[in-house]
Image (cartoon, rainbow, N blue to C red):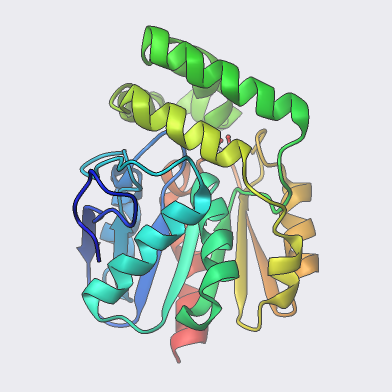
Length: 267
Ligand code: MLT
C-alpha cells in the first residue's frame, strides 16, 4: 500500500474499530467522518468487529492527490482490509458511504461477504444534480462550511429529529463544520462523477441489507425498495422516526437491523 500522500494511489485511512469477531466495515456519509458511527461502535461491538474508517480527506485521513472518484475511495478501503489481513468482510455505508460500497462491490466482489446499503441510492446523478454539486464545491472552497451547513443540514436529519433531538442536530452540525473544504469539494465531485450501480447490485451473489429512515428526504424509501428489488438476496429495514442519517438518529433500531444481518451472514 502506498502511504506517500504526494503520489497518486491508495491513501492510508485513519480508522476506529471496536469489538471482535466477523469484520463489518461501515463507511460514513458526506460530509461527515467515522465519528458518525459512535453508536454503532458502542452498540455492535458485542456482535462483530466494527471497522469505521475516515474516508479520504475527512477526519484523520489525508486527501491524497488523485482526481475525484469513488473508485479511489474504494481502493483505499481495499488497502485498509489488506493491511488488516481481512480477506472478506461485510461492507456497508450510509449515503456517500453506500456509493463507495457499491464501487467496492463492482471492483472487488470477492472481498465482500455481505453488503449494507443505508439511506443511499443505486442511480447516478442527473445533470442538474451534478451542477448543484459543482456549485456547492466552489462555494465551500470560497466560503468554508457556512453554505454547506445552511443548505444541507436541514435535509440530513428527519422531521422528528429536528423537532425532538436538538443534541443530535448539534452533533451533526459540529461534524459538518469540522469537514475540510478541500475534502468536501473533492467528495462532491467524486459523487457527481459516479456511475450507475444497478448492474453492480444485480451481479451481487451475497446477502444485502438495505436500511432507510422513513423520513429520509435525500434518498427516500422508494430508492431503498428499488435496491432491494435489484439484488438477488435482499431485505429491507425501515427505521421509524429517522431521516437520512438513520444510524445517528435511531442508533438502537439501526443496530438491531445490522446485528440480525451479521448473525445471518457470519453464522
Ligand atoms: C450523504 O449523505 O452522503 C449525501 O447526502 C449523499 C449525496 O449527496 O448524494
